[in-house]
Image (cartoon, rainbow, N blue to C red; front, side, top):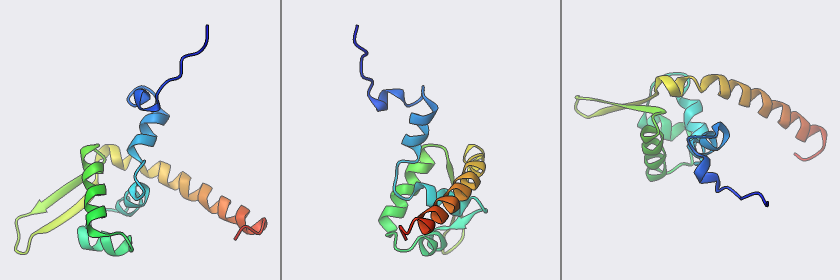
Length: 118
């Protein structure tokens, strides 16, 4: 009997790799998680750090990460309004992954230099 092909989206919530890929599929997700891994950041500061991201794109990405339970949005009742973003407890657990990705990324950059790719 032939193996039945599985739609990757059907694996979300069952397979850790498909679930992780779905959560981090946005172009800016990893970079946002990295920026928030050091502590709370206000929207404009995050926008400045992630230049050339647009305000609309950052808003969309933050909302998605918030909906996924990885990012917390704190609104302070001040004038003008102050909004800070931070990682949730489950989002904070991603710091270890970020450290590993950073280490691997640096090794790959060295590889690229050694092989003349950059």
